[in-house]
Length: 262
Ligand SMILES: O=C(O)c1ccccc1NCC(=O)[C@H](O)[C@H](O)COP(=O)(O)O
Image (cartoon, rainbow, N blue to C red; front, side, top):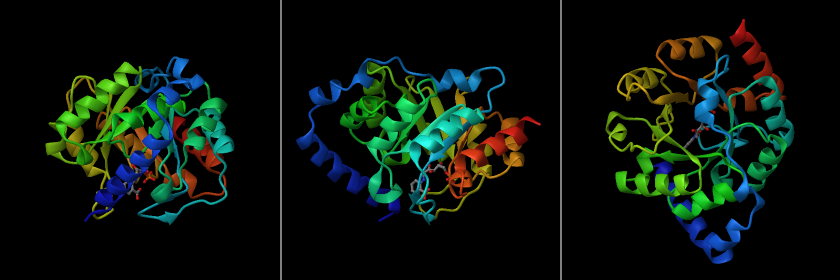
């Protein structure tokens, strides 16, 4: 069994429990349900956009504990002040140390920044959870879902006016895209071996539909990486560990974007 299988099995159990505790109707009572979303697709294409989507994650299966001190409001506010195009907030507790509260707190502290609920989405119920806690977009991992499941989850996202980011890592997974997808992310990290290779983005990027907004995810750590991927046609760059492993992730992000703009 791969780590992704393990995470997904655990997620199915968590979602089954959550459904017993909180109904869809209760989720709809959240004040975040009424808000208009901030579009990541739009901010990534805006003139002068940094393209950086900075992630708040305190641990991961590949790296273990990354940062035990970081506080979500402080870090996410500093990310916004640094000029990011978006923020990614992990909500998986078991494997990434995330929480729904982190998402809701980041939302309230950053009212105009696009925020991704980063989790392992398998059930339409989770799309409602994302909306109820203030997300602007959801992540669908193609390796975890069939084409039909991706479509169903995309439709639910659109019903709730959320954007859809689909993550691919292989050529075959590109076949699972549908017309409701807003952004495609190429994950440079092989989730079976945890190996990172930027050439995955370059290779798959060339196979994506020409007009698709695209981001490169994982293992990005230098301005040279970003310039290289920009040349390969990428609009956005998801970066987690590079900032979160420092004592002050917000400051690290600020310095990175300043360097990028030089
Ligand atoms: O990061 C992991 O170990 C991991 C393991 C299994 C599934 C997903 C995983 N990561 C999720 C991500 O997509 C990354 O957090 C994100 O792309 C940022 O990556 P990085 O900049 O390398 O922290």
